[in-house]
Image 1 (tube, rainbow, N blue to C red):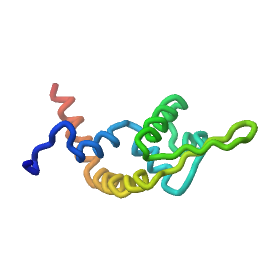
Image 2 (image 1 turned 180 degrees about the vertical axis):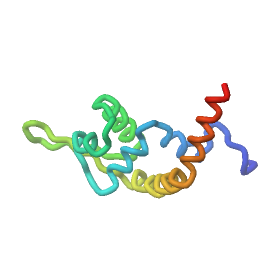
Image 3 (image 1 turned 90 degrees about the horizontal axis):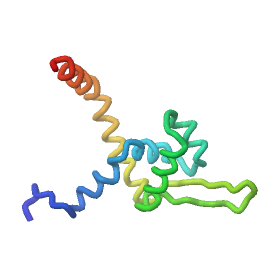
Length: 118
């Protein structure tokens, strides 16, 4: 196979698909220092609704990037933590953060200029 051929089931696309959600990278990054409860995550993230956080966590759990732990307490307590594949996503997220620090202004300026040219 040509190294530049990205077919539908290409493994590289898996990584891109996993990070394509708006909140996916933010949630993964928030869990980098250990398990958190959903309320703690929402407080640290800001701007994410309970519904969207729940959907994101379910998708990340389904994909094996986070693990959910439920404690038999009253009221029930739930925590989420990164799995090994989830921790493995921190390196590419850090690289993306460095890219953003370097190029965000340029991209936003170009976007704004393109919109004003319409």
